[in-house]
Length: 404
Image (tube, rainbow, N blue to C red; front, side):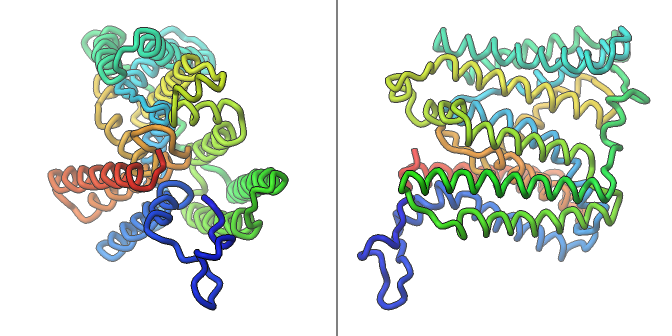
C-alpha cells in the first residue's frame, strides 16, 4: 500500500492526516488490515459469551479452549498452502486419520519406537499430499475432485488398518496419548513469550530495514515498534491466564513455535515468494522463471504433512484411532478457520497466522455455545453463517479491493 501522506491530494485540510477513499480502504482491508475485522469479531464474540456465562473467561476454560483449537489450527495451516496457490484439499481429515492409524499401529501393535512411528506417519501424510499434487499438476485434474476421491479411498484404507471387531487402536498409557497433559512451567512460559516477541520484533525490523534501504519508505514506529509492543502485551496477558491454571499447554507452545517458523518461511524465503507469486498469477510466475509445477506439488506435500501432524495430535487427545478419526467436521472447521482468518479462496493472499485467528473464532463460538447450552442446530447455523460471511467478505475484498 502506498504512503498516502506523500500525496498532497490525500491530505485533509490543516490536520495533515491522510484521507482514505473507499477504494483505498478496501485495498487496506484486503491486505495489511485484513486481520482487523476478524479481531473485532473475535472481541465481540468473547464479550458476548463472557456476559452470557462468566465461566467463559475463566483460566481453566480458556486453557481448554486453547487445547481444543490446536488440531484445527494445524490442519488450517496446512490448507493455507494449497489455498494460497488457488487450490483445495478435501482429503486432510482422512489423510490425517490414516497417518495416525499407521503411527499408532506401529507404536502400539508392532512395538516400534514412538519417534520412528511418528516420522513414518508424517512421511505417509506428506506422500499422500505429494501424490495428489502430482495428479493435479501434471494431469491438470481439478483438485476438488481429485482430493474428494482420495478422501474416499483413504477412509476405506483406514478401515483396513484398524483391528477387526474393535475398530480401535487405543493410545491409553502411550507417549502419544499423554501429549495433551503436558504443561510448561511458569518460567518456561515467560521465556517462550520473550523469545517469540524478540523474534517477531527482529523479523519486523529486518523487513523494515530492507524496505528502507530500497527507498520504499515505511514507519519504524508503525511497522515494528507498535506491533511488537502489542504482541508483547497480548502474550503477557495470555501467559498470565495460562499460569493461573496449570501453565501454558505444551501443544499450544508447539503450535506457536510452528506458526512462527512457517511465518518466517512464507515471508522471508524464496519459497514463500514463489508460493504467493504462483497464487497471484501462475503464468507471470512461470515467465519469471519459477517452476510452477514444483511449487504446486510442494504446497500439496506440506498440506499432507500438516494433515498427518494434526491427525496424530487429535488421536493423542482422544486416546485412540477409530473410524470417527476421519470425521469431515475437522475438514470443514479447518477450511472455515483459514478463510475466516484471511486466506483467500481465490489464491495469492493469506498468512500462517490466519490459521490461529480463524481457529480461535471457530473454537470460541463452539466453546461458548456449549457453555450457554445452545442446541446443536443453533451451533451449526451460527458456524455456517460465520463461514458464509467470511467467504462473502473475501469475495468482496478480492473484487473491489484489487487484491487479486
